[in-house]
Every structure is written in C-alpha cells, then in structure tokens.
Image 1 (cartoon, rainbow, N blue to C red):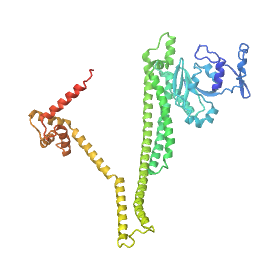
Image 2 (image 1 turned 120 degrees about the vertical axis):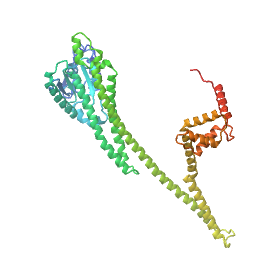
Image 3 (image 1 turned 45 degrees about the vertical axis):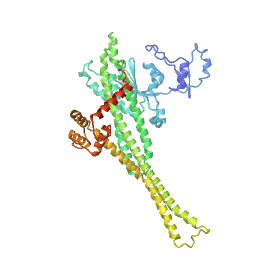
Image 4 (image 1 turned 90 degrees about the horizontal axis):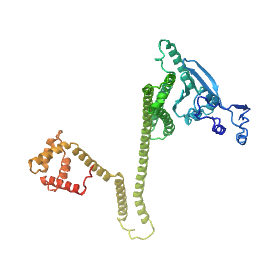
Length: 500
C-alpha cells in the first residue's frame, strides 16, 4: 500500500491498529473511475472531510495481489485480493503489511532487477492470535490452523514451493486415516517447517553455485598475478556474497529471536492454543519444546551456511591481499630499477662534469702536461665508481641485513634458553644446595645434564650466565642470589601490593 494512501486513510480514520480484532472495522470501499479512486464520503463526515477532500482528490488505484490459498488437505486455489480484502478476511494488523512487503505482478516485473539487489525483505515470524504472519526467504504468507495464504503467487519460486507443499500435504492426508487426531502434526508447524526447509535448501544450492564461480575467479587471478585484469571481477562477486550473507543473517536472527522468547514459541502452536481455549485451560509452558527443536535444527543449518559464506569471502580476501602484495613487489622492482638508473646517471655525471670543466676555453696550466689526460680520466672514473658502489651498497642494505640477522639470532637464542625452564631451575637448585661457587663451564655442564635433549649452545650459556652473574665477576656465588632477594624486597617495600 503506497505511503500517500496510508497517510490519507489514517487521516480519515479508516484503519484500526489492533483494536477490537473480533469485530474489525471494515476497510473503506473504493470507487473506481478511470485511473483514480475516491473515498466514499458519508453524510455524517461530509462537513469534517470537506477541507481534506481538496488535498486528496485523486488517489492511485488499489493494487491487486495474487494469493494462493492452500488448505491442510492439499486443496489449492489462486485468486487476486486487494488490501482491504486481506485485512478484512484475516486477523493481521495493517502494520503487518510492511513486514510482508507485498508486490503485484506488474511491480514484480518492473522492479525485478532492482528488487534482486536492494529490495530484500526483512525476515519475520510473528504470531497474531489465531494466525501467524510469516516472511522468510522468498515466502510471505499468513498461516492459520486450517489453511494458509501464500502471497506473491506470481513469482516462480513461490509457485514451485506451493506445488511441492501441495504434494506433501496430499501424501500426508492419504495416511491420515491411520493416525489419530492427537498424533497428527498441526498444520501450522507443517507449513512452517516446509518454509524453513525450502529456504535452507535454496541457500545450500546457492552455496554450491557460488563455489565454482569463486574457484574460477581465483584461478584466473592466480594465472595473471602481475596483472590487474581479473581484479575488477572481485567487486561484484564480493558484493553478491555479502548481500547473500546479509540475507542469511536476517533469517538466522529471526530464528534466534524466536528461540529467546518462549511466549512467542507457544503462540505459534495455534491448534493447541485454540483447543485449550475451548476447554478453558492454558497450554503447558513445556509445549514450546516442539517449536524450539524445529527452530534449533534450521538455525544450526543457517549457521553452517554462514560459515561457508565466510570461508568464500576469506578466500577472496586472501587472494586480494596476495594480488596486492604481488603488485607491490612488482612496483618495488620498478622503483629499484629506476633508482639504479639514477645512480648510474649520477656516476656518469661526475665524468661529464669533469669533461665540462676541462672543456672550457680557459687556460689552466695543464694543457701541455704529459700525464694530465690520464690522471683526469682515471680520477673521474675512480670517483664515479666509488660513488656508484657506495650508493648500491646503501640501497642493498647489507648493514641492515646483517644487523637484522644478528637480532634474529638473539631472539632464537633467548627462545631456546627459555624453552626449558625446568632444567634451569634444577641447575640453580643444585647450586644452592652445594653452597659452592659455579664457573661458566660448570654451569654449562650442569645445565646440559639437566636438560632432556642434552643440548646447550654457547650463546644460551652466555646469555643465561651473564643474566645470573650480578657482580659480573665470571663466577656465580650465593651473594648473587641474595642480591636478587634484597632487590625484590626493596621493590616490594617501594610498591606494596594492594589488598584484594
């Protein structure tokens, strides 16, 4: 229903939002005249609506929605209904139409491309007394205990779902004679499970369709790693996957919200609620477990689908990062090549500058010197080569590489030394028990004996012994450990621990 029509209807008080649902106010009839309709004005409100009649002279014609009605025995019929008829013949509220987001056949054809990307409906399962408003996946319906209205019946997916559901209900009805009424599953749960099963099957099939597309894209990018020819395909692919992920998350959040509300799960048992009302009792609170088990199973399946989508998105992101690194490496090679050419030009420029100095037609006193030419050529070449070698050495970063190797070696030594703290603890324990001093070689021998691998490097011994030797006299004494204890006491006295 268009928003201008809703606002005009609200001004004329033709909607009733949840008031006196047992005796709803009939929706106003609309008189059709060519391409416009007008509200029928009665004599009682003619004076009050005279001022608003000029502002809402021509309202758009009401749309008709194709609805498939399916009963619990599998009988199915299709008809076209207006919004007034839907509200009059059902117990849903007018605001529930926003959750359903109904479309006519003409709107479906006109907005099919736009709807596929931006017009995703919000997922909702709303109990409304003796009916349930359902918008889940591609299905939008109103369910009662005897039948269900499936909207947007012009859509191909809805037609396929209705056909499969009709076949299932007819097969179930054929076996109903051998099943008692208490054992027969309520129609609303059968319909709800059919919608959940159809939606999860659609999502799983879509995952299977996305997988070869993603694999083909990743192979194409891997073959052209130093080119950006395949990167442009990443944007629509990730956009489609993220839209699919958002749709699945909406469905999962809808089921999670129901699972967190026991009252709503009980309200979904329309048949039991009606039977209990007739008998003058309330449905037991534990009866929501049937609905809970149903929702938990399909919630788990939707969670698995989300994991699959996230995995494909992570694969695309990893490939994007890899392409970025490859292009950055290629770009760095080009920059390095440009830098080398600049260094070469600088070294050659020294000789060019010397030639330019001596090429001036000025007397410098070296015109008749027998060794001047060789000395100038040799000096300029030596200076040019020295400058080029210095620049290349600085660019190559040999000093930085050697320093980095040294730091990596220190990290490896410290990691190995701290990997077996039990051996170090046993070594110090033996040293304190003997009340003797310990040299570097003795410390090495006892540490190797305490270790299971019997392997200790000189770097590890040097690192640990230097840390333990407080006085730096090359020998471990008991005074070293007493100095540790004294230092710890001083720190504790300066920074006392706060009581817990």
